[in-house]
Length: 398
Image (cartoon, rainbow, N blue to C red; front, side, top):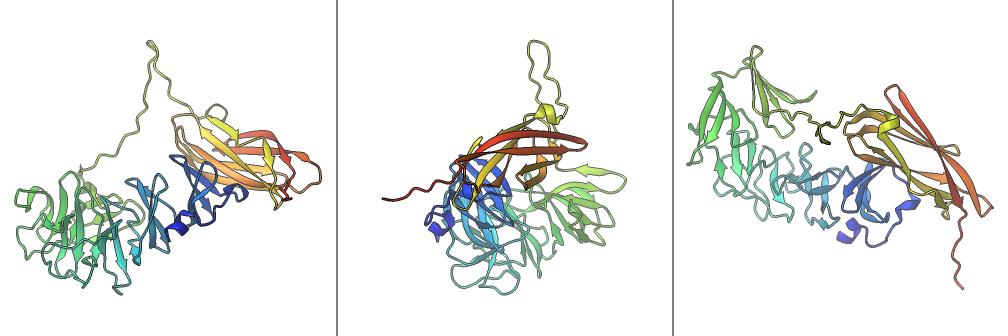
């Protein structure tokens, strides 16, 4: 299975294919998209990870290889692939490896319950029994009615009978409530040793003492009524009559807003521009311009046709400024064939757009014009590149 995932059983040359999107991953690798599937190729256009998976998203230097949310393997940023022998389904809201653990369920449980495994398929087991948690026989993780990813060594888990709780990576319960009989209707993910816990006593900010017990650091509200979770539109929010908890994608509380006042727990990073001084003059702030800030490069001006009658061309569009082009469009056109890419182009980033040029002809070589049109807001940049396409010349054995 490892050989299949890594694409080693039959090397495939990507030059004859063309991709809808190409994203540089570093280390000589690029993530490519073909239709609705993704894979990874190297700088020689050899397939490292087959182009047949859901979007390959890296976190902590590794990404899950998924098909219909089933985990087929794990790949790192060097292109090393590790297959999983078990049948695991990843949590749709958390399709990453967090703190070394993955939130999963499996065919060993028909209802929607969640547990944790690491990339070596070692399950997380609790050190002590937790009422309402499901303990399976064999080498399976303990299951909860809901589970969030590990953040900073802690994860929030939910059991219908006992509410929200916290566990650590050793399987110990943490942030123990002062009253064990009082259930939490909401627990945020832990951030910098602090968390928000909502009970019948209200909405409060907690820390943990030396005995692993939750102690109140600040009372945000002495009651919590009309709880409602709103996921869309982002950001997610826990709404109460007393106020609103604004959450990030990992369920950490960013802000508590009462309408008249607000408390910020996670500052939104402010966009900064690095100023490099030359003698006394500071570097000016970029003003986005297609003519000044966009660089266009061809993979080659001399192309070789393949046996299928097409020649592969890749065009690299680079943002040379420090600002982001939002909603930029790139269109390639040659001999009636078009390829369009749209998206955001971060400062100093680049996007590679590829296309296959029809190349059926009897001459040894022909000339073609490749028209590149880039649109941004009300501006348009057009450039034409001349390429030479050489006729396919098969190597015949004697």
